[in-house]
Amino acid sequence: MNNDIIVGIGEVLWDMFPEGKRIGGAPANFAYHMSQFGFDSRVVSAVGEDVLGDEILENFNEKGLRYWVERVPFPTGTVEVTLNEGGIPCYEIKQSVAWDNVPYTPELDRLACQTRCVCFGSLAQRNVVTRTTLNRFLDAMSGEAYKVFDINLRQHFYTMEVLKDSLVRCNILKLNDEELVILSELLELSEKSIEGKCWEMMKRFDLKVLILTCGVQGSYVFSGDTRSFLDTPHVKVVDTVGAGDSFTAAFCAAILKGKSMVEAHRLAVEVSAFVCGQAGAMPRLPEKLKGIL
Image (cartoon, rainbow, N blue to C red):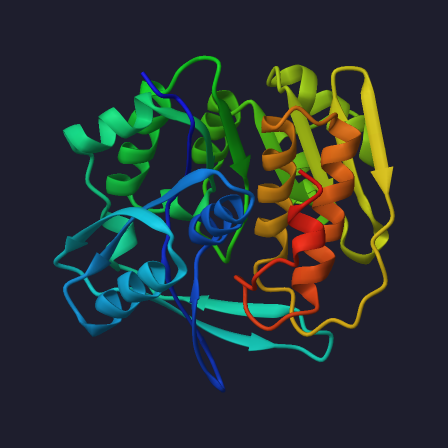
């Protein structure tokens, strides 16, 4: 069986900016950037039986992005997005929407068995339907596959139970410095330093890789006995929407193509810096970045 499919599973939606709507959702961003690096990637989610749902699928088709997206009797997801003076997004995420209700089907089970790498977050698990689907998908995957938990804490849409369950199920964890503070308190980590907390989580949850991004202060990658730190490049920020998802995708693409953790880290930093300088979460990457792999 072919086990080379890459999946972003969870929320798919429209980010509603003051100037207009843009396709959004971390899983779609991740899958799109993985496809730019030549992988057979899929978005797994759900949209409503409405015009916004039609437009999401049309957008994916235009981008050549493959998907397993069910049409369900709930409205297509939307998020009201505003940007502060630094280009940092603030979100108001609508509830009881289509991506809260992704069903698990035999077709999805077969896809899970063929998935080499999946990226998922905590937001998509706010509703029991999609949470159950996500967990069944993870359980159906090969034990050798990469299961990337990009924690992505949003508003009040997470619980201690969900976070712990996802930490146990994943083998790669990605979080930012603000999420590290929250997780440190919830998990009652004993270490005080940033690096100490990361190593403690690596050991407690038997992680292969832990990625910590700290905005303009740089980013870390921990794996085995390896610790990599890189400064964040200075770029003119247009907006940061989707930059973290592009970081995750570039990192995963690099390690799946046999690059070292340090090489993967370097590419991830360069790709996310480029995305910060563009409008929207899914800009086309320049050939010089894609050509690195």
